[in-house]
Image 1 (cartoon, rainbow, N blue to C red):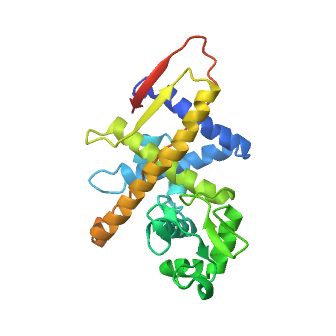
Image 2: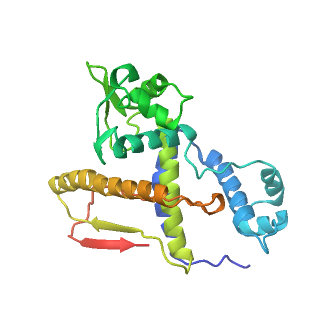
Image 3: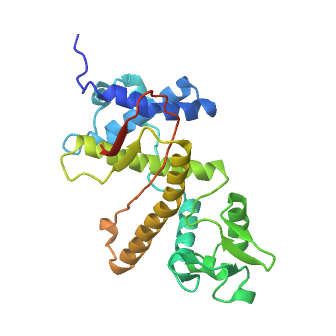
Length: 284
């Protein structure tokens, strides 16, 4: 019997990576059978899109051979249209664009990274109003609709003088599972793509680094958490400002446009080890 050949370290790594995803599924009621059916679709779709020979669509038999999915299931699943999930939903992209303008563009900010409080109505604030901010991106969407949604998500607050304050330095919904799930999908996907590229390709690796220590006290963790929240956010804002400048400076042709994702994250959990260890910087 011919056994599949792959690095012995791969399956344990995949099992470890899947643990938090399985935790999420169990908490939200997604069963193994449900996810297994979904996984079949992903295997078939990736094989069809990315494992072609001479740019020709693979046959059902070849996809079955590559994936281990039964040929009858392959035929059924290939007839389903699988959407491209690389882009954020339109409402998320719209919100992120608005927040970027508020953070980086006059008259909505005192200087890049310092958003102004905006009068809710153009009749009170003129060009420096929430009405005007929304109009910079779309004149078809009512500012009141955006404001109500952003208040629901905890992105803005309105004070007693009817001025709108930005409560976050990025479009980060504090409430709303669907909006959080959209960023979960986007960010985790792109991080995984960078890591998989670095494991499988010989071309220039993507930057993917982390700092990890094993023996910190709760007080030390709290201090690091705050440092990442403040200093890390400033780093991301600086990258966002540079990206906005470059987007305006270099206008690509429609067939040469590229998207980028730059991420930063922090995680901690109890470490029951009985001996002290520390590791500085690691990468895939």
